Length: 186
Image (tube, rainbow, N blue to C red):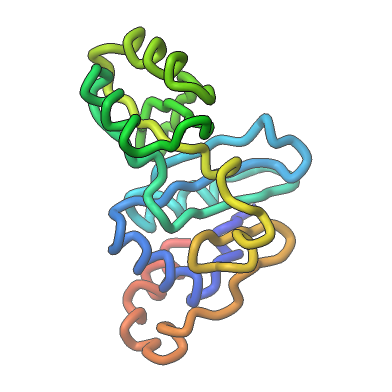
């Protein structure tokens, strides 16, 4: 099934603006019935997102597209990167370490925990590798507020949680080329 058709022109316009703000979107794709089979991607343009959505063959489908930059602590695994984590992630908060890739390659989860000593050990074991660290967005957000605030995330499955985008409603001409490109490449 071509799940790209789930996105209305309002969604595409909003996602275009989100990409312009951050340069990337964090996208989690999976089955409604098997969360362990989910994959996460960093998308850097709408064409990648459309390809991802249109090539899914799962009988059930769930996608989360996050607006904010995820795994914001990025760099070469080192003592300096660990020091940045100490300044950024509060004590006793969960963290996840990933190997950050862009679509079509999904991200690789390479570490996780809840204390600084474990984090320091993991970073030192990965020394010299390019990594990204942050709180896993699927664990971090309060689900009720996340799904009621479409400015932070879009969710698609059987139903959509975003039916209109005010900027598109007010200025559809601004997005005409983007929407046409989205619809023409289906």
